[in-house]
Length: 255
Image (cartoon, rainbow, N blue to C red; front, side, top):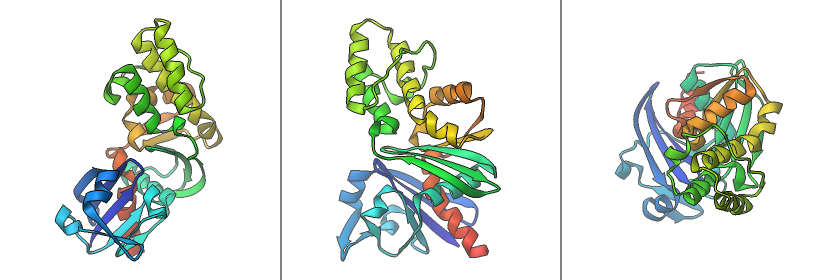
């Protein structure tokens, strides 16, 4: 059975098609461009030309930030946390872990035991603990996200708890003459500090990183150093929610 999973993220739309246990197609789109160019709203639902995008409509499962306000016509919908847990189980093969998902505008921490969600926490009220924060701070430093993710040592302390005030504080540190590498490490450390309370409450010996934030290798090093946990980076961290949609469908089809 071919299943298409759609994760309607705040910054990007992720689509995965799986045939049984095999990923056969995948694409990532800017959210605004996707809604403008690929969808048509009618009767409160969005019709997406999946065939035109190269995906099957045999069975469609949708999740994500955007499903709260936009329903994909013909799609089954599952909760975002559930999709991410199924995706992490499928991609990692682990059964006991804490999942840290850093998305464009929110962060989720989920504790999983014996393949089942035990507890979860989210921070969706402030962009300072999300991928958007990293994007903004990298822009202030004049570097790419990839370059930002290279720095985790000799971090300059950044204490602002708001994304906007964080930019102001970073500019002040630049004026003080700190090396850019130390400032970049400070940005990565500041993101860790914002999610550390959730990680400490739902700590495991194994932490799986997902979402766009998982591409930040410096953050992975910092979390490993500060928590003492083993860090697992998924093969397709940004697609985890979409993969979870397909994995959910496959498990329920065969249950």
